[in-house]
Image (cartoon, rainbow, N blue to C red; front, side):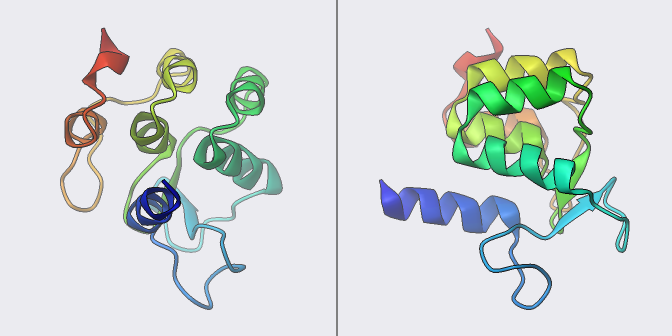
Length: 123
């Protein structure tokens, strides 16, 4: 299970040595290089990545930005789908997450759901 988690994090986060603190994703807003990312943005992203549903849902309800992306264009919705967090997926969709937004490889969140066999999250 640990190897799967490490692989999932590497694929979705796009960590780049020297760009961020070790173990933290290279986050951007709206795919814009150089856009400032706040501590709250990182906190929400980390809660989603760690599967901390309670914290993630609370931060989303409190109005945290949900448009944070990695350098590859993956967003919080993709993380939530890949980790199987139905509660966070629902909260992000309610907050206006775009199910048709494509990452830099042309993949949508729905494709991510199919890839990780998580389509049950959308029933």
